[in-house]
Image 1 (tube, rainbow, N blue to C red):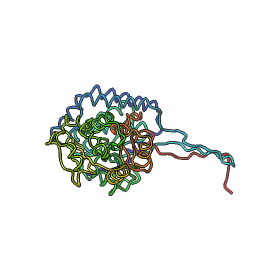
Image 2: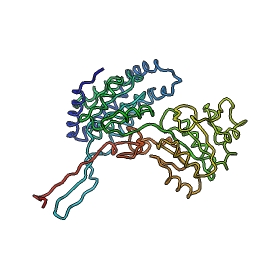
Image 3: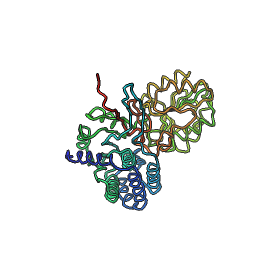
Image 4: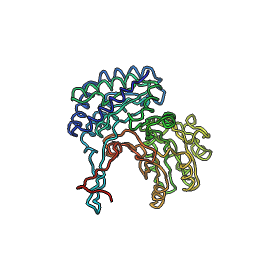
Length: 416
């Protein structure tokens, strides 16, 4: 389906109007939408059920696609949290007065129009809208065909609320599913200021290779926990279990356990709770030998080349045994997606070296990687986890969805 350039230009016009809207009106819009989500769950759940009926429940994306009353109430709660946060706009980031009396202020401002391309994650529509509108930007959503009915229902509710609150309905635009619309969004130079892909490595690589507008990469997470020779077993077992099983289909879920060889005898205890969740472990020879007889045989596999560097998004994980701290760092440097990495250790110097050496957006010490989340960081919600280094890194929330400009005020100064 061809997307008219007028659609992108309408979003640009809506962004201009939004930039002149009082923050209090935007907050009221978000509170009204949060109420509407809770009041109108039935059509949202019915649309989601149609999408779910087309997907195999064993597909790792099924859990991401699923909406239920609790998740919708959580989305509404997050939206109210965003509304309660201070506006990220108009913040003075830096200021100076030059010797000639010229005053310069660096001030946070909206991007303008933000496009987000995502896969089977219908909650993204609400999260993206709340954050973009709070940050003063119109948003263009491009969801996948797996969530087409859910996305349409969500967009319809948002547009209905925009009209009700007196906003330009093009503050939100939902593009049709399909590759043609994706490509047109990626080529909308002059109409779209920024595109953010949320999904797996395939989607991110495609967007990066084909975009003519600026891109911030988010999503792909190959996350590790390194259990050091000084690690506490009780902490390690809890962190490994939580990071792996809390929600396997999200980008902050654990994919690989790295174990110091001196602690091989503790491996069965570290993995014991995983058996209850039927986690398949792909382990190297040393770890496999340590687990035999202590972990269900049908859940044990010999690791191969594909076991490391894979974002499983399912009840699978790898184990790699290392002989030193430096070997653990080498493994992470080779296989990490620079999303979230953790160490379990009691030695302060080892923790300090790990957090300094590991190149990732979020580096944890004795904490589960499951906390890589905008809401958990006190940001209200997030538009994604940036794994790059330009502009934003880690959870992208309100402040990360703004750019800046310089305001210069004088009294007739001219340059000699």
